Image (cartoon, rainbow, N blue to C red; front, side):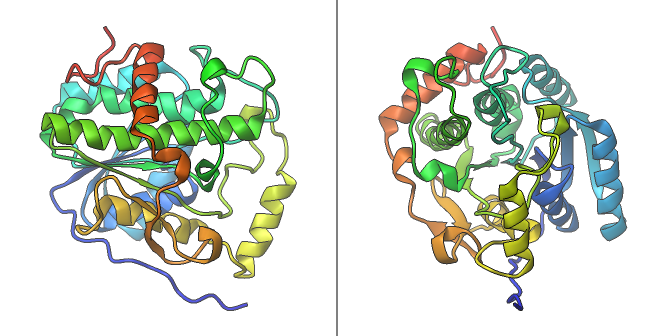
Length: 319
């Protein structure tokens, strides 16, 4: 089946500094390439340095004059997050846009981060929460737009408030949904608190729909030795242009949310096709689990307590 071309226009980002997580492959690499082509200096901190170097070489084949800044970041380690934040603050350059894109999904069994958190909530949400806190002065200096990547999995489910680390009755899919709900609530609370306190930061959400990325592919570091049946089906549907997006189109909602002058703070952007699984990016109705300001404030306070990172202090460093 032929696929109708889908794209957006990314405005000039000359003179801007962009930070993107998860830029070593898939839609993160696509987004980093587009940011660089628009003239941004792109910070690309990654966990796997070999993959990061390969990603930068790939970008430079398309954008020879790309301004790329490598870095080390393991979102499953608060020490790694703090080290990157310290290095960037020492550098002192404002950050003008940030796309929180990296994530993990459904390890075959319950795993924990270096700090003892359930892996998905610890990486997808708490790691990014701590990273925003670590670079908060730079985001404020750049009057940044922060776009946080959630998932269609955030449109249902809830926070397991009594056991956020899933130490009892572990369910990998429910834990993944929780991680994305918590992350979305944080992104919306960031917008509310910035507006109330005059931080100058704007924050919104995006989701990629469903596309053949590495989330469900073989990930030996997660204990997944081979591709899941789900990713094989997703690849087939994507290749045949049925419902789903591609790694290139899946990154467009985040690019729209992060760079389009008309993108609204506190809004959600995702594919506009059937079921919001694929198609051209557009603003979408906020998912029901993300609509409670009370839940958002509760997630914020819980995240500060778990990570030891206080964003309301205005510095974002661990005490």
